[in-house]
Image (cartoon, rainbow, N blue to C red; front, side, top):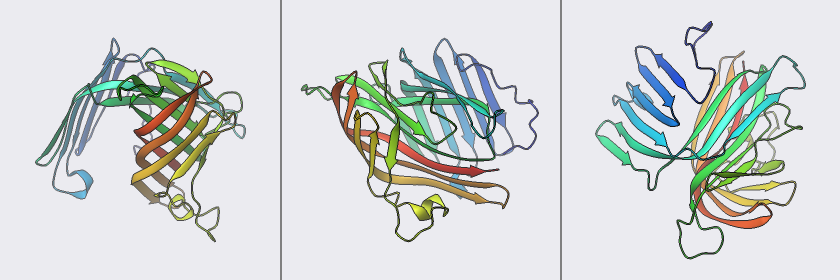
Length: 272
């Protein structure tokens, strides 16, 4: 967190070009994009409360034809908004190194997404977001690598009565969905105002459906990447749960089978 940045980071106004750069005595982030090629370079000293440094170098390309772009208002504050673009299903190449552990990844089986936003948010906000990408058969064929498939679900953040960000992507082409809901198992006897981690049984399967009968998925959690900050006036309760999606999604009215699609689902509450 940087109080009163006052524009000195000179963030680009477009997600299609420019460089995002930040550096202090512990971290360095350098993200650039030109001609649909994205370069990411990260240096993070003493990563995850250890003596090891994190080093990431990645190149993202093969940007799909379609992406999700939305401008979301808030009913309770006419000056608040969020402009967001999500690109699902780019190919990734590069490496990640932590201490002596080096993990390389190549485009034939590695995917990447972009979550890019600008906005003025309300003081108290909650969102639910799910995303996944990978190779899927989907139509009952014999090959497990028939289609490059991705999904993006989101709600709770601002007023989405006019439009939502719910979409699926098959070979780079988008198909719009209706309003989506995450049925996350709830702990009995816990107040609805409790923290996300206390209120939900996040490591049990989630059922994801929509209001048009097009989505019927089970999200099976594998790992909860969580962070909780409570400074009184500033609270951030974040859970990014990684796992797999199984079930069906209707693409242009035709059922598309989803099996073992790796991705994540978030439940986040912020107050600042």
